[in-house]
Length: 218
Image (cartoon, rainbow, N blue to C red):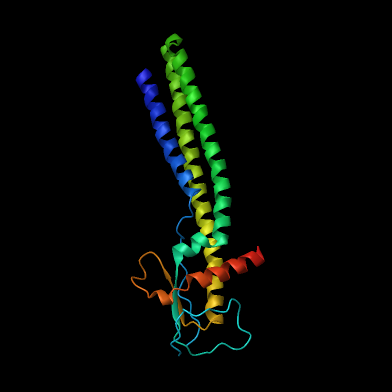
């Protein structure tokens, strides 16, 4: 009897540790985006590079329609340093602490029930022990279902926040690209750009633009 109840405890603790690990991971460093910014079309026949300082707001005069300006942004750095992603991560972290507390409560309740059974098992009849074990198994199954529900909530919330941030980033990079006469702005990450000259890297000015825009519209 002791071995069977110990197996129950071990099984639920494995599930609990897996959930807690996920929640801890989800509430830490911002995850890589679900989607990376799509290449941005801007305009079209000048060979100017991205080294020069770019305007931070749309130009009042018409941007040259024909350019060959092409650049890229480092997606990982962009999202790590973008204030919008930082704020989204903080919101997710707050929710993750709540999920972790719920999980801890569920696990503690089950462990208490098992311990009480272990203490009383010797004085129980065979029928009472069988009934109690069935109840514990049902409680264990319910615990597993609740933990799966918490995992789904965490995953859905992570995806939702990523989508919201990326939608805003894509829109603002498009605005930036059009304002500065770019034909194309690529996003590094996920192996989609094997090489890019550093003078084509406009991550810093784009970050400055994104954070300024975000700070003005929060």
